[in-house]
Length: 121
Image 1 (spheres, rainbow, N blue to C red):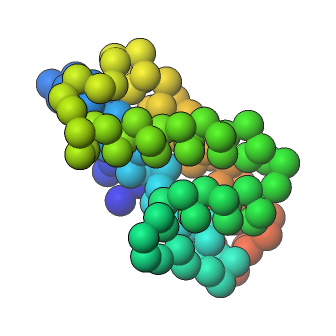
Image 2: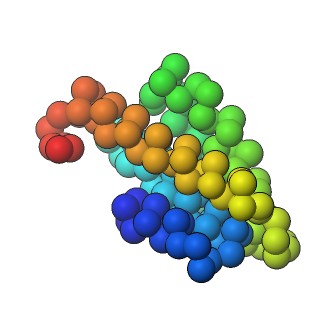
């Protein structure tokens, strides 16, 4: 899902809103992977926010700069999906795609170090 969402987020035919929301979904899926590796799952009302809070605990300093950014993106994604059109700019979408790709590399390396049994290649 992460690979699909990152690939789809780069489709220039999509609106900035859709590209942003799709890149956000990749970030959320990566976050859920980290939590699952640690034996946790965020569910229920507010689970996106809870997931990012737990991500900070699970990965620590490695994501200290990303977690506040991803939480801000969570709020923007809520606008995109529930409140209004044209909430995200092209610049915001491109930045989130870049941060999502960086986060993917961090998560993969973290899994290799902390959970090698999961076999990330």
